[in-house]
Amino acid sequence: MLLHPTTCGERDLIAAARTTTDPDDRAAARIVLAQGRLFAPKPWPATGAPRRGSPAHCFANAMRVAHRTGGAYVEGFVLAAGRLRRHAWCAQADGAVLDPTWPRGETPQAYLGVPMAPWFVNTFQQRTLTKTCFPGVLDARVQAERDADRIYRDGVPAAALLDLGTPVPPETGSWPATPWRQLCAAREHVPRVAEAIGSADRRRAARPGRCQCPVPGCDP
Image 1: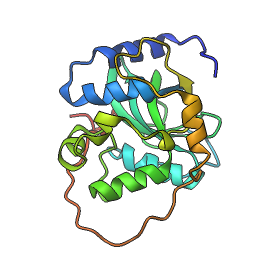
Image 2 (image 1 turned 180 degrees about the vertical axis):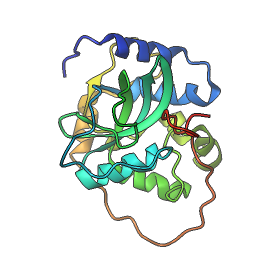
Image 3 (image 1 turned 135 degrees about the vertical axis):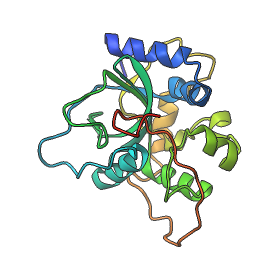
Image 4 (image 1 turned 90 degrees about the vertical axis):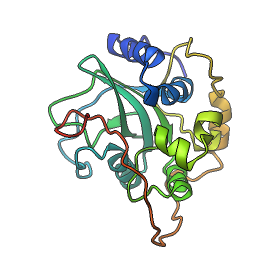
């Protein structure tokens, strides 16, 4: 896939992710810069799209829309009003952004995130007991307390990555990026949409993650 010239917003987003000093964002940014893709901002469709989600629940909202549309769950960062914000959204087969959480009439300057197959996120939620209160795959607290830093250490598995969006230009930091042809080959062996992984109720005590959408109570 050819690299397109990045926009000013995309360049600023990449720079902000590379230089963030937020301890809760640094490890996630390392993964996103290595395995993530750039996505062009797009307004929510006027018709034909699933219902939008509740504010402050971008991770769960993105998963719901990914299941409904057969798209990818994308987790990473956006740049809005010059600020780096953790966020999640859905991406369609053509790379179009479906963001069910960001307020109508407002669009981030740029999106940068890791496009994951919904079946993998379902498996992650089961493994970490975070389905009821989902703070994201890259949440620092979940990684430390419930996943033994598995994603921070090894990255998102190649079989779970979807070839959507635009590759990040070179100089993505020290994390070794996985060749995308390897990811595409692995992707042929996994389903396009999420599998049913079980419906038994479990006791979950995960703390809410930081959805940083610009709505009251959403960006502490």
